[in-house]
Length: 459
Image 1 (cartoon, rainbow, N blue to C red):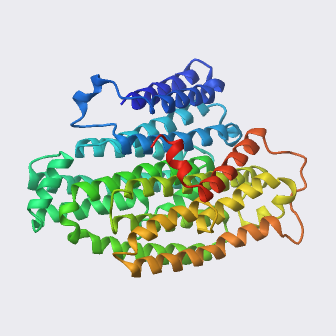
Image 2: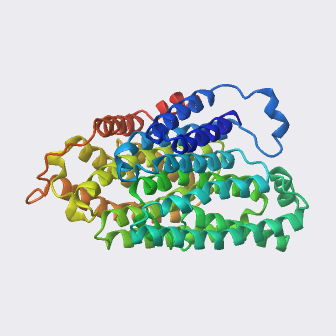
Image 3: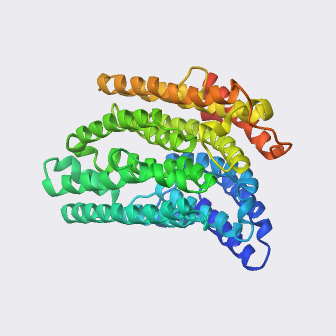
């Protein structure tokens, strides 16, 4: 809980820096607060907070997912100065809202109660509705905000209805009492209906098809840095909430929802990868790519074991690193060209080779090419799931094979154009090259030496 308090106070400080005309320092305040929070996450929790453990507990898994979320947020804030250059009048609000959203994610990492789950999801989501529409003069951004808000409110209704049915069955909001009830009453219809409704609501939050319909439009219309935040930090938070709820709270009635989830995985992998092939806009292609990765991640529910949470964290961190590498390249191109079509990336490697290499390795990692972190993440999850559902793993492998086509298409445009469209003297900021090098090294290092992940995050 110490980390949650620090990040919340940092968000308040960043917000009020704008009120007192110090908005230009809001990014530095945010980065400083995140670094302190990252350090504190490695320290033992004060005994004082143990009294709140029935609602929120900062255990080992919560600490692990909090650390990777903070690291990814830090990387995004390092590149945010250039990305938010058009928002100088209200950039303090943008940093504050991102930190408030991160606070909601940290609540989700340690929730022990359905009330805390609901609060965490709403704290995570509400700032995003504003952030998606923060490019006020862009009609696509306005559409993204409205669509995300309306669909999010609809999903919240499913969540609350599901929670009501679960509470009506068990008489408790406590996660572990719900677990005990599910083990003793595996055929309780009202309880199973509540579990399915909650699964649908959380499937919306993580963009699991067919509950993904908002994602392409919202990801494309939102400012690109906000899109990167939603594709990485928000996905980490929402998917861990889904993982914890289903694997602990509803583990006793797995038979009631596991086949539904398997069907959703097949739909997700087929639909997202086929739609990704059909795109001519790189940002929209990455949106469908993000949806497809939820299908791979959802395989974690098959063959659950003691390493499942660790495998999930590794995959999410590897995917988030790749997302940062690709999206900062997209942010640079979008600033120069005012568009994100494939054509806009022609010859990028000739003018900004480090940025292009970071994007290329990021996409190869997303595709699961060996010697990248993404390959090791997929391998761990596939190896776990293949014992119980080889058919779904085969579908996932085929989906990965299809995804290589649209990733390679963008890589070919960047590295092997007939002619370059970058005839500008403007150079990428130094912070972008620094973050690009970090991302390249991290993706390759974790791909070759996956045990580094455990050592670096204090496991």
